[in-house]
Amino acid sequence: MERFFKLKELGSNVRTEIMAGLTTFMTMAYILAVNPSILGATGMDPYGIFLATALAAGIFTIAMGLFVNFPVALAPGMGLNAYFATTVLASKATDHPITPSMGLAAVFISGVIFLILTITQIRQMLIVAIPDGLKHAITVGIGLFIAIIGLKNSGLMTIGLDASVTDVAKGQFMDLQSFETVIHMGSLESTTVWLTILGLVIIGILMVLKVRGAILFGILVTTLIGMIPGVDAVNFDSLKGQTWVPDFGSLNFWDFDFADLFTTGILTAVATFTFVELFDTFGTLVGTANRAGFFKNKEEGGKRVGKAMFVDAVAVSGGAMLGTSTVTAYVESSAGVAEGGRSGLTAVSTGVFFLISLFLAPIALLVPTSATSAALIIVGVLMIQSVKEIDFGDFVIGIPAFLTIVLMPFTYNIANGISYGIVSYVLLAGFANLFGRGKYKIHWLMWILFVLVIARYAFIGSQG
Image (tube, rainbow, N blue to C red; front, side, top):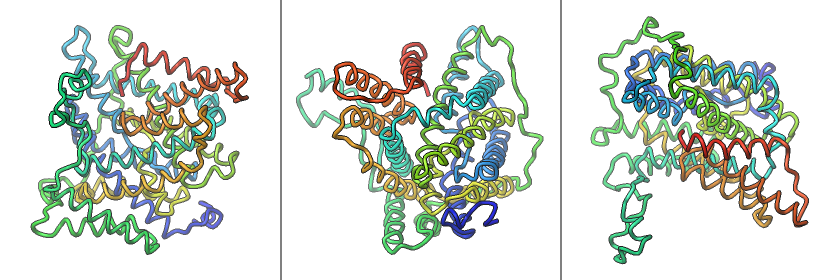
């Protein structure tokens, strides 16, 4: 096993990899409950979606580990599943409603497009085309994005929309008491918030003491504390009335409807799935590879990410065949990397845990949100360290890097951050070159991406 996964070469061992895999699984396990809830609103069978989610995550994460030797896990993506659901639901009031089967067909087609882009090496060219400063910005932005997920899920941070913000901007309200910020501190009366804070303290102390497996141990200890009567953070009701032996007859396998492909909004859905997944996956893979140190050897790191893109492309269509929305590389994989995961054994371990969850679903869902939220916030701390590699004194790099970093968490979308980073870099580098203020390399693919990003926002909008 050590020889197959090159553990010594990567500075790891079997125990570390398995613990890292378990950590990644525990930070991702929420998708087993959330995905059926989101897609179930479209009329799809929630239990069938659960099966598809666990199978897709298990099968394709194991494939990532075995064929790429990369510590990244895959599962149906948050945001993309919400877009899938809203596209189907919003179309019901139109003359050409989109059915869940049509939606799955759109996901399948986007996967085929990814496969073509990967085989032709176009996706891999992104690694060469995007400047190093922006690559590091992607890592930092994803770190903040992960931290925002943790803060939001725990209740430590709440997001609210208040009309008074617009009114104050117009000068109609001068009383500062009427002004309410969009992002708020969560209520300290919440048990979930306090348990998250306790989890942060536990993990932080363990990390300061350099305890191996600090994040995983923090999750486990926080979960045990959540079981104490009076805390009641663990939902034991999830154990009731559950089928422990999976009924694969409920799986919506190959449930595609390609009819009316050109008479509904399905092509717009295909375009959106393709665009968002293109940048989401690139950002996650590059960010994780950076954190794991794979880009110390740029050529080797690029090859590994390229292979990972191939598995990801197959996973998109494969997940649709199983009956779920777009399967993508998960930013939560960084939690496993933070625990020392450096090889495909981490991914294989995570995938095996997902397959086991088919039989132990209620137990997998016992881990409270507070425990995983604390872990995600700590992962944000680890990933933001790449900010020191960015030269903010060079505004051609600094401004695009800043936009990349801030737009990921504040728009809650990885693709938005990368999109604005690309557009601003091409513009600034182009003008700098034109007026003799520098000689910045602009890869031809960056110009194509520049046009595609502008077209995407102009004609499709900001969905996803």
